[in-house]
Image (cartoon, rainbow, N blue to C red; front, top):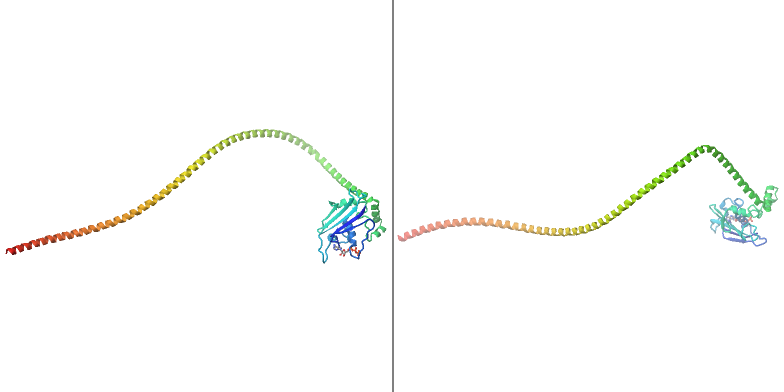
Length: 352
Ligand code: ATP
């Protein structure tokens, strides 16, 4: 088992995807101060699940994401993938190569992947136990760590030796088992409490049980009665339904008859309407004719009045002429008398 590859993208001073291939033997990374050498070991610790941002030399979570420079925009997320050769199956996984990947976003979200499958940090920790690779393992000896190992503090020294001897795994499992035991004890205590509580409730429950039995018995009887009643009701309803269906058939028949009559009536209605229209038209024509006759009558009336007026005038004229004739006749008879007188006078004169 050995470290094969480290891929960084957006992590601290590595905005562009950077692959570092570790061949067998020793690989050294050299560079001037501040060029990002320690950022590489930070990346290794971070991908292995480091949660303390201080150990990663930052103040806040997003300090591990590339913050941008004068020429490059800041990144929204960072990603580190660490590939381990597992040909010797030291990691208890059925893969010859294991890639642990961690991705983080500016909102603080962080995801872990094992061979590109999403997983929990717990899964990664468990796989790396006793391999010396974990974030607390002895595989990363940073500045100051040698002093820590050589210090007089036996607790710190113990941690390193435990990891190297493969005890950490059992210590972790022991802690897990102790945690489970504690939970189980708590659950047992809760069950005991519940048991006592239930025992107290048992007496009244017996009388309630009697009542419940009675209730069940009665409700069974009620159910039978109800079922019988429902059966009767259903029979009655079925009978009613049959009658209704018959009646409905009859009504449908009548309805189709009525429909026929309706269409006949509609036909005759249309015909009658047509006739009414024709009569209306002839009435209009007759009215027009009456109006013409009325106007002719009024014209004739005017003419009659005129003729009557003329007759009246003629009568007056006749009367006047008659009077003149009688005057002339009178004058004529007077003249005749006068002529006669004159004739007599003439004869007398002649005789004379
Ligand atoms: P030394 O040899 O002095 O320890 P070093 O080569 O280890 O230096 P690092 O400490 O790894 O360098 O890197 C420091 C550089 O990383 C600084 O230039 C810093 O600006 C840059 N850096 C750290 N975090 C970020 C970030 N989030 N975004 C951009 N650049 C960052």
